Length: 92
Image (cartoon, rainbow, N blue to C red; front, side, top):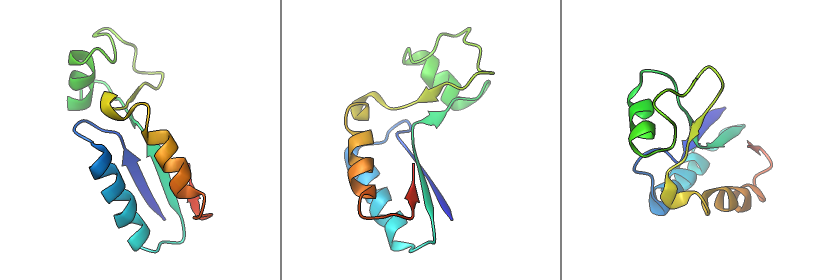
């Protein structure tokens, strides 16, 4: 089983699609795809999320908050869902 996290800092439409093709080529029994990456306290991702206004600097990160790059916010979920239509072993 593989795990694919999409939508992190610097992700583009091209890199997301490249990652989908790569994961598909692995021919694993199952693939779990996540759009957005959980933000954990005191991490580089947390600092990026604060600087981009995704979360407040005082955000309680005990409850899950997720980072999804703004340039893919409206497209990524649709792309992944369409990709998964012909791949019943892929999970979201």
